[in-house]
Image 1: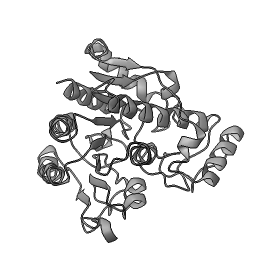
Image 2 (image 1 turned 90 degrees about the vertical axis):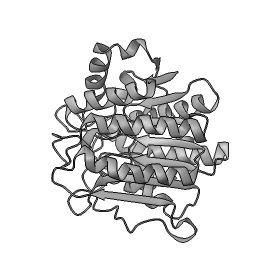
Image 3 (image 1 turned 180 degrees about the vertical axis):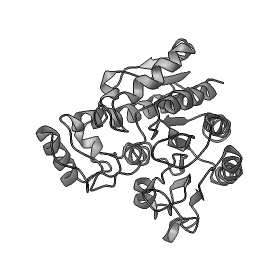
Image 4 (image 1 turned 180 degrees about the horizontal axis):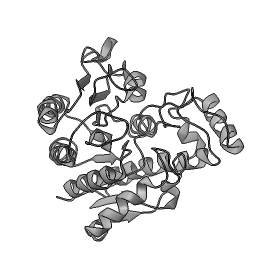
Length: 312
């Protein structure tokens, strides 16, 4: 069974109409998915909220208190300007993290096989600050949940968003239990300016990370497939116990703030291959987050392709 989280509470994470990360992103996907009858093939889960204590699995108490305060005030910025506070951003962040945690628990308890959380994968936030439209880092919160409460030691995080997932990478750069593989637009051309091939982890975690920057313009599916083979080889060595995929649609041709030119077929291929790898190594445990994507048509087609691959 494939579970998809959908509801107004999850859609609420967004920075206003007209913003690249607006609250209309979820419905852009869901309307298209329903036209293709995916709503009849998946289990639709109601969004749930994380607790403050769960947010502090990853984030500092000081930062969460700041998020609560600015959420109540509804003004100011949570970082240096990219991530504005809006009324209720704390509550909507709780929902993003809550859906990811709930989805993982459903997988681990055998309630569902695979999970897709469309509005999630906020991979830029650090433990003590927001960054790049990401008020919190739900991936980091999930990784802490898997480590602390389930004792997992080989957690694989795969990121195919156009932007390097710096908030995950650098917070776990020295952690040998977290294996990261990240295909992204070369940091010399795009925010956050990181994720170089030479960055493979530090200390005891050296070799546990794989960065695969692709150089624009016109990075196409054929380039992605070459890089993706490296990820498959990487995962066969890791033999993960749980796989997380951040399937950002901003690497698709026509995104307004990136320079890549993939098609939804790349994301479909990655998802399908990860399903097979998860079946071999970790009882099918795969949780997918929607990540970025700022062209609404691209979001709709790409995330629908991802869910379709999960069903297949």
